[in-house]
Image (cartoon, rainbow, N blue to C red; front, side, top):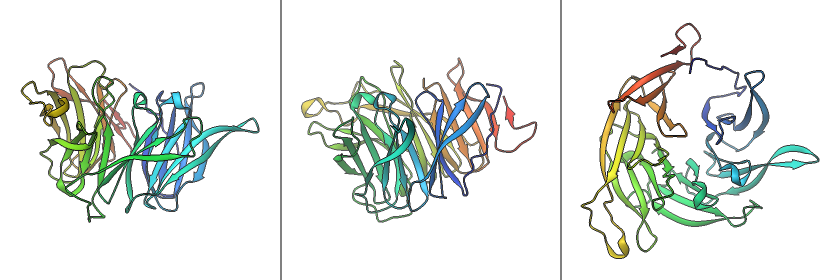
Length: 328
């Protein structure tokens, strides 16, 4: 990892999110200019090339998420306009075009995060809005993405949030060997919570990831890759990046139907304040071994566990030009 590829995003306002596809050779950028742009990596030239740009929403576009490639080239975006848009790349007159397939408008506030479920759960999409509700949608026909049905919803807190300014975020557990779960950042509560279904298939808040000194801006559940434990990273307004380790709680008592409310022991195994500013994003690599974080200091930091088990900063990428733009 010794080269940084720089390119002009060509947006007319602040870029809120950059999302890579499954293979890492395509990315989507979304911005306050209400546009989404799709970029493909040209391996021959070593550059990112724009192949699509469209006014996607009537307000700033906050987040985007790629579906697993087994469902085709499908992208979801969310916005301040309280909607989620579903996009698909299709052939039209022998030319590839991105087409809006559906718009979801069930929330009572800004849609603050959107993420497709792991592919073994089907073509599902979870969103969380400023009203404090998580909603899960499913495509009724994966060959025609026009019709989506809300199959579940649950509140993040004890009830709907009245704090329109509160920030919520979510991330699915990708493991095939556990019941479906997700971690949700809970706005003004300054915590993240693990949610999973009980024996009645109702989503319940279980373990709490605490110790944050401000709003949790982002959460990311690491791909499991056969580990006997789970890793979850959080980005916080207090300037810290935290990594939590979830291990099986063998003492947890099973409830009716074999569902255990306390399934994991939660330990904060890393806590970094290197950004010295608000941290907005955390994201794992495909194997869950390297964590990236970005913040208001204009730097992306990459974290990796040493042989001792301690997490260390392995490199820093700066948004500024100059000899210190990339550091190991």
